[in-house]
Image (cartoon, rainbow, N blue to C red; front, top):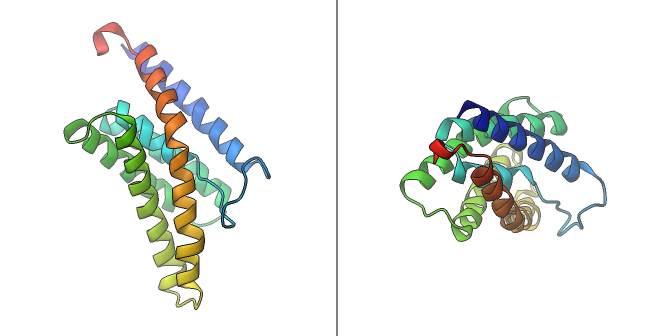
Length: 171
């Protein structure tokens, strides 16, 4: 059982690194309203649907640290936010939600929306930017919707990884 968990962890880690690299390539994804998708958010959400709370939180922490390293801002802020989000999504998926594509897309929209709203609050609204409404409606909201589109292929990828790399007694 430990070997299957380690294999899943390495597969998820490789997936997260690949997605991080893909989202950093300029011109790979078209810009929608001057926004690019954040591929690590649907990756964490879809992994959280198939893993328990603590592994989902660790995946969120890893993805958040990758995002923090790439943004050049305060180290650990996104890591903490996405780790808590991964834990909450995993808890909700195990207790209240059905594990299906619709739940994954809605959860991606919810977590992406919460993260975008937090970013807006702390970077535009509280500092008193005159363009804060524009930033929310024409940049952060389209980015959240654009990100949720990628929940579909990532859901199927992570479902495949979770079912194929699970020990027989671990189901």
